[in-house]
Length: 89
Picture (cartoon, one colour):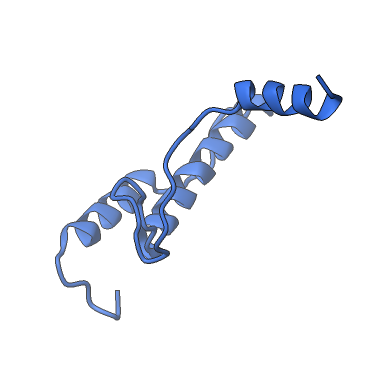
């Protein structure tokens, strides 16, 4: 057997189908979450709160800085529950 035939046979054995291929660019999986400004803002708030907690623990602060977490969470949930969000908010 020539070297090329051996190489082709070995690569054929390694290949296997993984996943699925979508031919149309307009198709999107239903499992993909489309971020909105409100969701991005909330996620960044949560990450920031975690960072503040870590730094407060590392610096051994007696008291953590005020962040008004409960108020921010409450405001986010109230706004997220509304069907039509006003542009002003």
